[in-house]
Amino acid sequence: MFKVEANMISRLISMAIIAIACLVQTNSARSENTPTASTEVLAQSSKSWDGKSYRAYPIGIPELAVMKIYIPPKTKLPWHFHPAPSAAYLLSGKLTVEKQNRETITIYPGQALLETVKTWHRGVTYDKPAVLIAFYAGSFGMPLSEGYVNAHLESGK
Image (tube, rainbow, N blue to C red; front, side):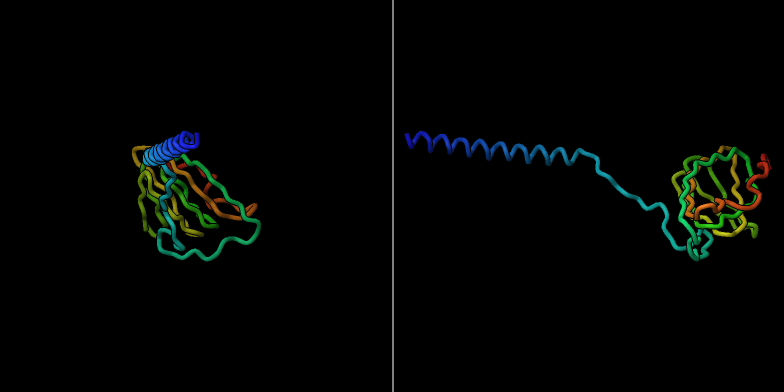
């Protein structure tokens, strides 16, 4: 009887080893086919697109804002500036940012822009509208933009 039990135990151990090997193989195959999380840095700097260093965040209670902005085709936005650091990510269209000294940068879909702080500028679109997501890091009660932001858009110029 002891020999039968030993034989049975040996078979159970063998089956357990085979089962574990199958599980390991299945999990290995599953992990190769399962998408994993990933991160891509789109923009990161202590300077805005024109090379000027960011000084400091505004004093006060921090307030973050994320906005989806639509700019019609063939539009020149009014001149404005941002009092705190901000960034934008272009979803579609083509956008040129122009400073008053005529320095420009053009971004395309999938590109990010680190905005200037307290520097007058405007956005210009072309034959297609531009859609972007803007991220603002200000303080409670601080406007996101200042200047001619309430003026009508200059279309077709």
